[in-house]
Image (cartoon, rainbow, N blue to C red):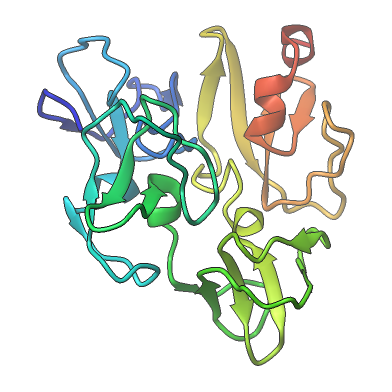
Length: 238
């Protein structure tokens, strides 16, 4: 994945502030320990990797596919390759896991989500469903939108609960409460626990911050890192 050895980094900048809180493998925003390239070579392939992705072995087996998967070291393909779990099309510089016996490929984001989990939306553990070809229509119990059954989702067979995997693992799911980070190298934001009796209204999309955390910038609040990334600088600095 990278030509230089990666070194464990236990502290972002000595003051607990993350200047570039994105994993180079899964592209998720995260806080906590990571493995970084100490050389500072400037290559875009792998500069820092979160613990979830660094634990993925070169010979990787997944319940969603019958063959073993391997870390792809090629960055040029003669046709579009997409993740079989989320249907995302890979860019030439993307890191992915590929099968050598068929055309199955998987991104690091989908490869590192659990096969089974417990959450507040159901009293039973939810299991990861690797796509469903049935003609039945399912609705997400979190966002109340239709579930595309060709994309992996979580379900409980006892209660007929179905949830988008992105509703459980949104763009801020791997950020710890109390963490701080910077945007544009100058604007500092904070991850705040959303435990009040009321929910803040997102300064960009206008929706209530329904998640267990929200992102705070001075007088502005955002429901997700996606809204932060699309917010104008003047809103972040307000």
